[in-house]
Length: 321
Ligand SMILES: C[S@@+](CC[C@H](N)C(=O)[O-])C[C@H]1O[C@@H](n2cnc3c(N)ncnc32)[C@H](O)[C@@H]1O
Ligand SMILES: *[C@@H]1O[C@H](CO)[C@@H](O)[C@H](O)[C@H]1NC(C)=O
Image (cartoon, rainbow, N blue to C red; front, side, top):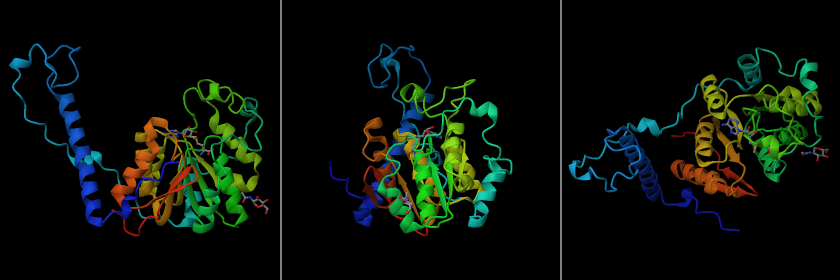
C-alpha cells in the first residue's frame, strides 16, 4: 500500500499559506482561461483546433488579445456560514416538518401498491465497507446526536450506525441524504438487490425504507430519508441551521462531486464535529475522492487520517474560515 500523502497540516504555516494561495491562483487562472476562451468571439470554423495557440488559416490576421481578467473569485467559493444552529432537540421535528409534511415518512408504510413492487427486505442489505470499524470508533468517541449521511443506497451503513448508536444508548438521529436513484446501470449490476424500476422510478427510496422498517420501530423513528441531491439537501440544511456532529460522505466518487460534497458538508458540520468518508483508495476518476480530500485538507489546514478504506478529517476547529 502506498504511504498516505503528507498532511498539509504538518507543513509550516507559511508554506501552507503559499500552498492555498497557489491553489487559489491556479483555480482562478484556469477558470479565467476557460471563461475567456468560451466567451471569445468565434471567428473560426466550428471544427478548428481547440487550442487557441494552434495555427489556423486566419491566424495571421488575429491580433493577440490580452489575457482575460480573472473572474470574481466568488465563483470559486462555497458558502461557509450557515444559519445559527437550531437546538439539537428540534432537528428531527424540523426535518419532518420541512421534508415530510410534518409526519414520519414511515407512517402507513409501505402502502399495498408499493409493497408488491419491492423485494423482501434483506437482513443485511448490500453496501460497501458499511460495517467497518471506523463507524463504531467515531460514534464511540464523538457520541454524535445528529449524523448526516451523504449517499445511503439501501441503508447498510445507516442501519449499522443506528445499531452502534443504540448499543451506546445514544439517541442519535441519522439523516440519510440520497436522491435514491443509485446510478444509471445500477439495477443491471445488482438485479437481486434492487427492485425493477417502475414508471421511471428506481424505487430505491422505498426499498431502503423497507429495510429500515424491517429493522424495527426504533430505527424507523431515527433513520430518516432526505430524498434529494446532496447539493440541494446540504443547501437546505445550511439555511435551516441543521448541523451534524458526524457527517459521512459516500455519494458521488468523481472529483467534482466529492469536492462539492466535502465543501458543503463542512459548512453544516458542528465545530468539534468530524467529517469522514468512503473510498480513500479507489481508482475511480483517477482517485477523485482522495484528490478532493487532500486538496480540501490543504486549503483548510486540517489533517487527513486514513482509516481502513475510509478517510477521516481532524475535528472542525471552533472558528473556521
Ligand atoms: C456507494 S452508494 C452509498 C452506500 C452506502 N453509504 C453504504 O455504505 O451502504 C452511493 C449513493 O450515493 C447516491 N448519490 C450519488 N450522487 C448523488 C448526488 N449527487 N445526490 C444524492 N445522492 C447521490 C447514489 O444514489 C447511491 O445510492
Ligand atoms: C450491539 O450489541 C449487541 C449485543 O451486545 C452485539 O451483539 C452487537 O454486535 C452490537 N452491534 C454493534 C453494531 O455494535
